[in-house]
Length: 344
Ligand code: COI
Image (cartoon, rainbow, N blue to C red; front, side, top):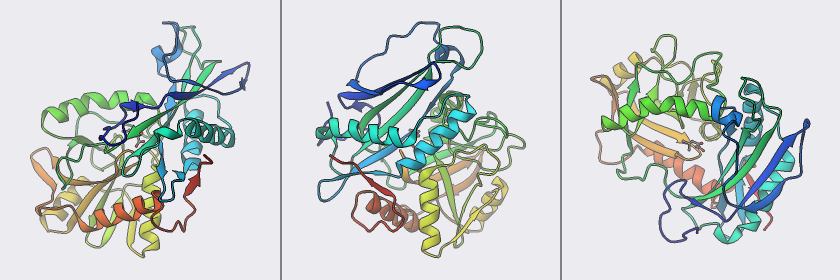
């Protein structure tokens, strides 16, 4: 099952157990840890038709003394409930779920990898009613699976990944579901992603739905720009960007390190001009899966929005990444109280 020495890639290797909990008659039933395996669902199950589904993603890290800590699980579980509200689904009891996830990790403790690999925790909630009228389901299944993961992007070029802006499709509009972690957002991103990969790009950069003028996010992760001496990232207020836990952690680290940080709307035109003037120093992606991934190039149509002309990734990018993973793997103090120990 979980390979210890070979790079497992991302999301392909699962541990032997999973957590399952059903919701019916207005209440969550007793949770159970069962063998990882398929569900039997009617073809009429609501989730197949109307995508009433939400999920989360966070990681557990093997510490130098052999213990295991999750990174900010409460933030992710709070976000799960925010997504649940948006998709008209029942909230979970976050403390009980956190305890259940600890039990699950303990059960599969022999599959927790050594650094730099991690155990990715994937909670998911699906609507299970079998009436194909569009309606909020009265029944749900919540489950959590664990995956042994390595690098999300495969890390072929140390300077990072290549991106292009998406000027036709949009990921999310104000009032939509952009701030919720629901499968539908990811399904809607696939056509653009497919088109971008055919052009040799790893990902797209989504622009705002109204004007296609401002940078939003990368779909599976947030994005940050080092503009002169300031780290700039799009704001969450518009409701169309996923409030990333890694994003929040990096902003806290930067502020604690007295770096100038701005959360503001960022016009593509400003970035193109800043790049031409040599003021756009570094660009990086951040997310649970992506951690902090350097970006080596962004194309906006035929214009270069950013290009790293050195033969290595940006210094601040790599320093931030190191700072974050050192906290996550317990190699550095945890001044923010982000590590949550899993009793094994
Ligand atoms: C994560 O970073 O945990 C996500 O859910 C993003 C997805 C692209 C794997």
